[in-house]
Length: 81
Image (cartoon, one colour):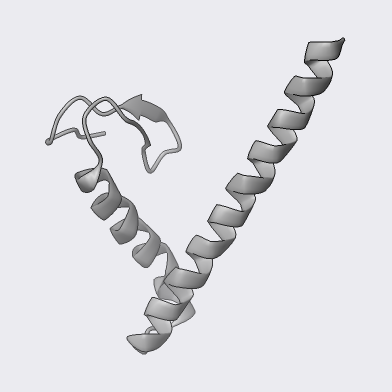
C-alpha cells in the first residue's frame, strides 16, 4: 500500500508536468503562427513541423512519439514511421 500511494503521487506529478509542457508547447505554436500571420487551421501543420524538427535533433536510443501516437526507440538518423 505504501508503494501504491507513492506511485500514485508520482504519476499525478508526472501527469501535471506533461500537461504543463503541452500547454507551453501550444502557446509557442500559437505565437509562431501569429508572428507568421497564419490562421488557426495551420496549428496542426505547425505541430507536425515542430515534431519532425525535434525527432531529427533527438539522439539515437531516445524514445520518440510518432505522429500516430505510437512510441518507438530512435535507432538512427533516418528513422521513419
